[in-house]
Amino acid sequence: MKIVELNHWFIKDNKMSISLMNLYVEIKPLIKNKKLVFSLKVINSEMNELLFLFDSLEEAFFFTENTIKNMRKLPEVAEAYSEYKNSRKEKILIKNNNKKTNL
Image 1 (tube, helix red, strand yellow):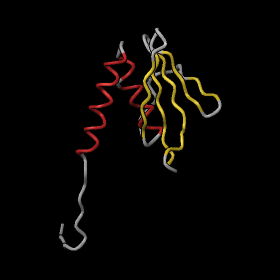
Image 2 (cartoon, helix red, strand yellow):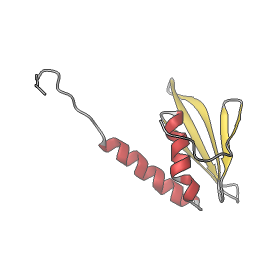
Image 3 (cartoon, rainbow, N blue to C red):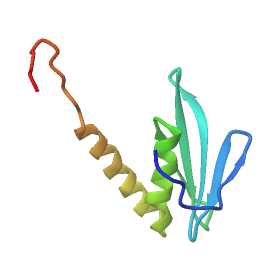
């Protein structure tokens, strides 16, 4: 859990939104393949948009606060999301329950 940094979020009807310097972001829950996910829509000044999916509200929220807030263009956001997803795939914990260890 992390402290909210940006203080101009709007919440209405289970949808969160924020206007950043160059982009507008909207986060809302979505059911995809019978699973709850959170869609993060990023819109630029020309009304072009990108849609990304996150497993939790926290991930979508902090991706906005930590990454998107510093960006100006949609391709930058798409590249950052790709890097984010790739970094999450590498973090796999394997636990061997058959082996006893003394600490």
